Length: 260
Image 1 (cartoon, rainbow, N blue to C red):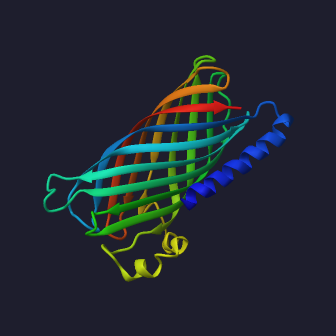
Image 2 (image 1 turned 60 degrees about the vertical axis):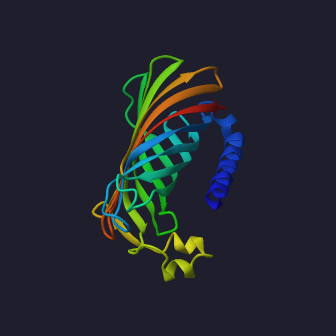
Image 3 (image 1 turned 90 degrees about the vertical axis):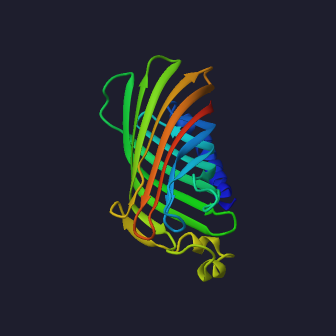
């Protein structure tokens, strides 16, 4: 809930800034996108079980972007409400798997290729939060605060139709991954200090945490202000230092955007 409040605060500040300064640059375009879809994938958490699990759930997202001729700034929040299942359900019960992702990125345009194609490259901050509840028998979680790189490309057929794709890769990460399962003394001590709990970790890089993501999206402009989109997104996580956690997820979702 606090994360959502912080995001809304950032969004309000960004909207205020864009309203004050948009008259100075007519090329500025702001947009807000709300999206939802299905999430399917693979999961393994050595904290609790040696088995491979399947993931199924629903995804929700909200994104704010601010675009100029030579740059793009955006911030987004994604939330996944999943369940985890295995063939050995009587031994290892069904679990609830909650995920949150917060991303802030700034990208600059690369050398212009044509009037219909643009490419952008830049840096990003991203937080991944994974919480697994094994139906009261045990809990497990991972929190990764990362700095990395992001690449974005767009092809516009005309004023109505466009396709865009993005690839991002975290490079340096503050990892919070308790090497235990169940209810631990550290969890009990910090249960009323969530900020400390999700930042009390260690620094690592791609040697211990690999988490690339890829998306491709088709956008159709209904009017000058509104557009709809269909998107496929792939997210992967592999944390190997303390009790390996692997997730691989495919998302298909639709979105509605308002541009101003």
